[in-house]
Image (cartoon, rainbow, N blue to C red):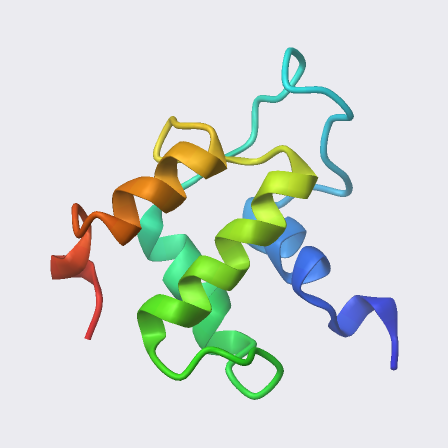
Length: 92
């Protein structure tokens, strides 16, 4: 399986970046919840989540290691917000 077919590459493609910064201090990348959902739908057959929300949370977990903010928040904060139901209107 090619690395170009993995979730981090799809995230980079969505951001229009060749790579992400190596530290949180230098991090300027930011994704919206809608972009996260689009990536999760693209990777639907490769992700294990049973629902759109669960797959989006998997992509958000990838953003943690890539140091990509979500909706202007650190990914762990965004994950907590999604789990709390703050973005439920975005999911089918």
